[in-house]
Image 1 (cartoon, rainbow, N blue to C red):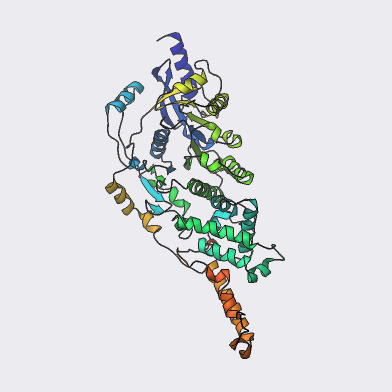
Image 2 (tube, rainbow, N blue to C red):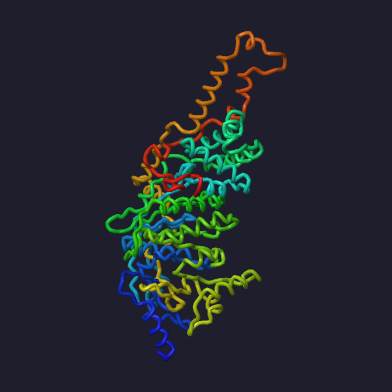
Length: 517
């Protein structure tokens, strides 16, 4: 061993040697050689300081998330992960041993011990796992406006509609409730009711909002709005001392990135508003992995980004860690990136001028190193290798280390179809969310209000007037039956119980007005 290697090992040990519980990430690489003594560890205490896993496609980001999830589960820390391609369900079963894994274990001087972990499968469509739902009210106007791709004017109208529902204690559970409410407030009866207090809603704007709601339903995603709404307590489960790994399989809705990324943010918001302050803990209560993070930030409004920044900044005090996974650090706004204390950077590929610019920005986010030229190292890392700097147990950034990562111990791929379906069938959570509830909500309330108004008007009409309306003139009944409000699409999905009726706080409000986030 030469002097440079000895110096490197000493530096890495000083930076990464921990007395507190920690995750073993791998061993440092210098001049192409893996130095097993230079162990690279991540303190569990620091995982609520959040993190970033980045790198080009095919560099091993998903497997890095897997090895983090496995060791967190072993430590009794529950994990929530987005399963983009549907290939993380193998976490439930011990992985096979092969020559490549054995070679990696030998280089790291660590025995490879296959293991499976407790896994719960979820789905937004309800087809690939337990149905994950949220009520329209829980989403709130800001997140819903992003999903519907509304402009500023339309988003403002949607905020007014939510404010009206809030002020009138009106349950808005599913998309049919929302469609009914939009139509009612743009039609004659509702329009007059809100004109002086909230302002007039144009039929052009309401029509656009309605069309975009229907478009979501036509894509088969209406079922994610309604009751029974997802209970975040199901994320904090432990099985035989191991933390539950909850996987949201979105392989069947990959072409709806705005929808599923926004749903994840709504879930994170509920966790933020619902969890009590925890202070500094020896390990986090939950680690939330946000894969395909660039989709969350792309084309987002200033208000939307401010909400994300606020949640990320404050949620660590609740004992929750959030790790973003994306192709390049530049995908994450600087205001959020600055809060991510733990960095695992896989290889970057430089093909275009934009790639060169992204590389320069990435290099500038790393501390200087006596052992690496950061830009050269980032382009020369192999699959399953990463450039790492994290926070040690005192919160101090560690020495930058090119690292050979340890291999995941579970299957690195999906379960076979039979085992996957068995896992769903045996799940008490899947059974729980099959149950649907259909109480009175905005649809029924407004329908009754319209019918009552119609009956009142009919009773005031003299028989001789209603028997023979003037030629070409519609009767009151015909007018009402022809109105937009009565031509709405019939109820197609199940609605659930409004939060305030069960004592549950709306996801988007934390028990406050739903007008905000």
